[in-house]
Image 1 (cartoon, rainbow, N blue to C red):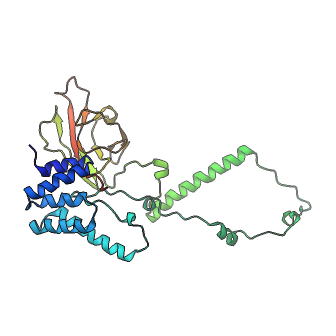
Image 2: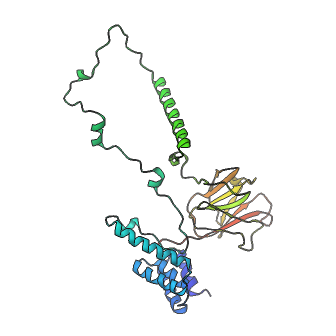
Length: 312
């Protein structure tokens, strides 16, 4: 039978925080000198003062405990932030304390660079007011000896607009290359994954936080977890570097046998990227190449996802 600690961890991962708290209270009685018990109970409660006490208790038992060090550092940083920003909302700073490194997800303001809008009252500084003037004040007198210029047709005007937009876009691309700044291209390409660096060599990798983690290739259903890296992202990215595998022919299978929909993208240096369409649950996932007759001959690439649910 699983220990109270393990049952508490399992309940927390499924989102049942009340049940997890009951198990972890029993775990404190059963294993009071186990630092992991204090780290996990700090992760699921929403009282920051108690979290700090529990994390300090974990460090008292195990001074080298990485999750406890990370959680305590976060709480101290949050206190300093609250003191320097009294007028900001508490929700801007509140995040779950997790034994795992958090996935780095950019805020929308960071992606689009904080585009500013021209306010209505600022328009008066740009366009001078003509209030009180009659329509004749804006009509130009015809120039004698010259004919009125021929007006552009709708087609010509549309074509001219397209040419202006295309050349403006090309100019922006050239400027970004010369001055080394990134354009906000998400509105064109969508929220698709991109590689910051090229894969180190040919193979299959889990790509996370700018690093590549090898995924071992199995012939047949894997019988061990050797070569299975762990992702802490809700939509992990898998990279096939210099592989002849056609990603659209693969199956992404969850540990319960369910098929997970995914999208494939072209990467860098003869590499292809695969990412689930939506956020996934924690557990074991395998990519299966179904070109063979049976599962015993099929190729598998497996990885794990481990995500701590947010604190309620």
